[in-house]
Length: 141
Image 1: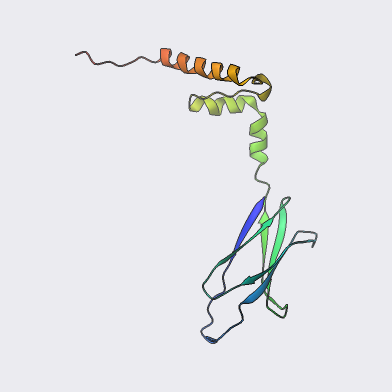
Image 2: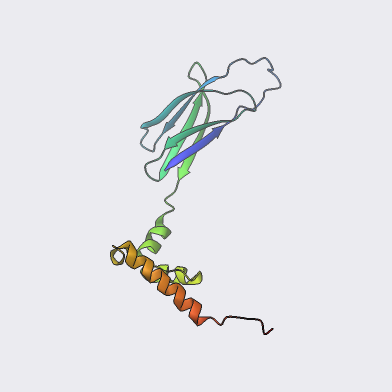
């Protein structure tokens, strides 16, 4: 999963002449392996996006260091495994058929649709079945 973190340096009213804009951003995984290391220019009130790739769910600490490598800020980012529901749904044909029927759709196993022509014919048949099942309204005059 690709993750984007937006960093923003807040203006410091006590030090309006601050000229240090160069910062280092480090991202580690839960086992302290370095995933991303980047130099960024952070100007006050100008957000900068940093992207990294998270292989699996877990905590990913993002650390911002100044030019002399002193930690300025750190924030853990928790990546959760959100696909559990989708994995179950994707393998449960009855649930997929119920979802498809809500919008007059069609749920078909990949094993049953090796030929695209057959799948198109099934879809057309479903459309015709719905079309003939509904009463068509026509004006009297």
